[in-house]
Length: 324
Image 1 (cartoon, rainbow, N blue to C red):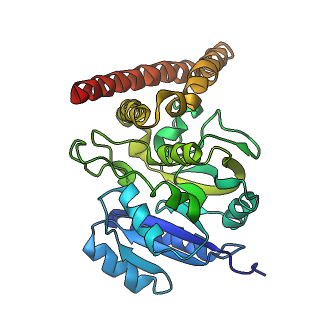
Image 2: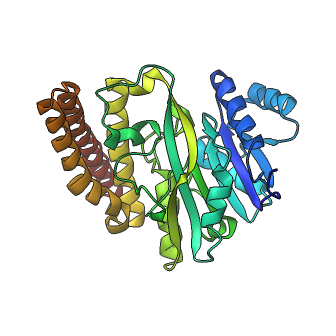
């Protein structure tokens, strides 16, 4: 028998008619939670036809249009604005929550010092799993990657497609950063995330700003709070891999400009110094043991580092020129 309804509002952002089946699966997974959410809010990002269709098909949900900046940050802020829960949880429209997802996240936030928590995102392959793709770079398609804790532990930031935050903490920092007035033009790209110049990783930025405002605040990672995240064949291509690494490097440069490099790059420094060299060594070891794809995974790690570094450098120079 399901537990009593929680005090958590769940916000789902969506924008593309082509992801309708994913959205349906996501919303059905929320209906099967062991601890049902207080409410499910679906924010449709500047797509009037999809807004009408979603309202018709899911009358029990609160379905609204994004009233703020186009993109994921604006859509999430629109959802938070109408939410009634003490906690707001976020999940992507192409992710499916396992039955105890919300219960596990809420369990983390029962401690008053914990402002938010994130959970594991497991790949739901829509095509063959690429043998060359290193698990250290699963963040490229929005999944949990090697280097994250394997048990409940504090982290700098959760992953936005699977996270819950105290609404009071969101109010403390005025929600997700939607960009500055002098940023480059913004546009929609993969998974509804704005990837134009001036963009920052909104979940990382939010978590850091909360910690800066509330120094005693704790963010937790709970791998038992699991969602399955759809991974289409396009997201496992080499071109997509390189583009996302480049964009991530640029995003982290912009993030450092806003929140400082000490906070903005703290997790990345460890990942670069410890996790990625270990991944390269593992790939070479796999090759020696007869797995030829080990060499490809090691090469992909090196290539991903270089692509991210170029993106970081380009964005850093652009920021200096803009300020000058």
